[in-house]
Image (cartoon, rainbow, N blue to C red; front, top):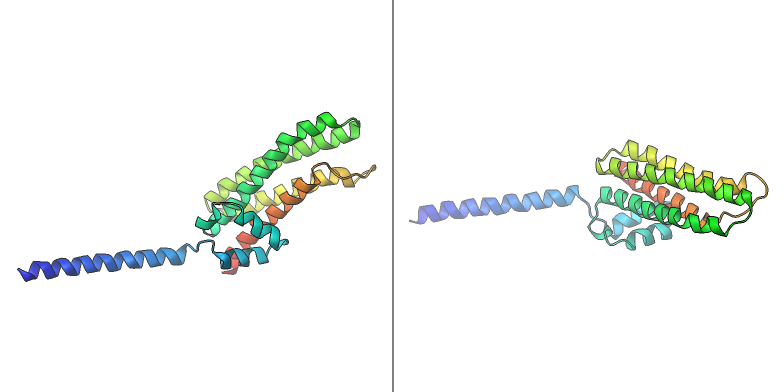
Length: 186
């Protein structure tokens, strides 16, 4: 009678050991976004404080691995771009100068294009196709710069009514690049 019990205990111990090894190997593969990971990513960004506050302000960060951080940085940017798109019609209503109206309409086009590119980047990141993510995010940064250029290239030089948003869009693209760079560095 002791023979089946000891076979059973060996089987149970083996299953427990296998389960433990599986959990340890998953922990090694999927590094969660602890302070050290966020710190190393944000050190690579141009604005450390903005990077840290962006991730810490998003509840998904705690459970995210590196790929999750890419997705989160893109999702935060999508939210910002969409909020800006929603705000532009009200800005248009308040403008009287035809040149200002043309400039902000061009920015609306840029932000709509950026939104499409961000959604492409999100899909590519979900598929872990980081070269595509980089291409999409580069285009998003260009669209934000184009919008800002509407107000800075030709007279009369003025500050864009969405200059804060264009700056944040470029900072968020920088964060996405920093997270992807962290894949390469480790």
